[in-house]
Image (cartoon, rainbow, N blue to C red):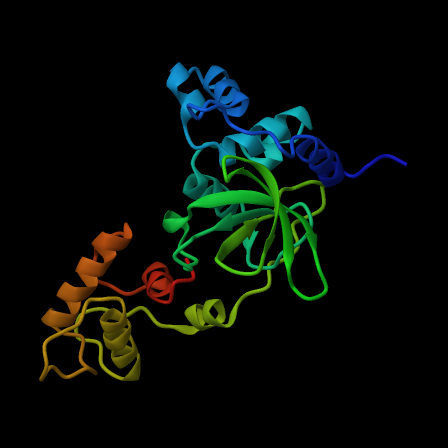
Length: 241
């Protein structure tokens, strides 16, 4: 019986277990990626966790669905733009980590692939550039999300939403002169993210101080700075984007 695409990919990845970068940081994965993308030879010395996945996907004939990236936030966004991003682990999924513990895509630090999910919730991964080599790991936290490669022609399973993602779907667009409980929620979320307002301000009224704090947060988060709290800003404040 023919192996599934994800099993073919995992077989190639397992074959690399133990590979260790050179003393100067050189890897065959970085050298391959530099040649493929017409980059300087110095790319062979760059952090290589994502280039390792691209190398393996290319050899499995799956690079078009797994991705061809050297930058983990961009790779995660690539999955999200295709509707293949979520927070449920499954075999063959690309797993992204943020060592600070958020689910904010621009903050992603590292990537690997899910080899198995155990009954106790532990995720078994294979990762490149972990302790400078390709290693099998057991993970249980600091996961920013998962990319689900389109291994088959079937539509992607609908990712299970977290409770915070469900909340974002129900929150209104807030802008100048808005009033009420949702404004209070915005007020205290900004405070929690390090953008407090001075005392004595009505926390149920969307006025100039609140708009200024929101714009500062949007700028720092890499969002459109429009002073309005819509779905993308809510998600960033709740750290589910």
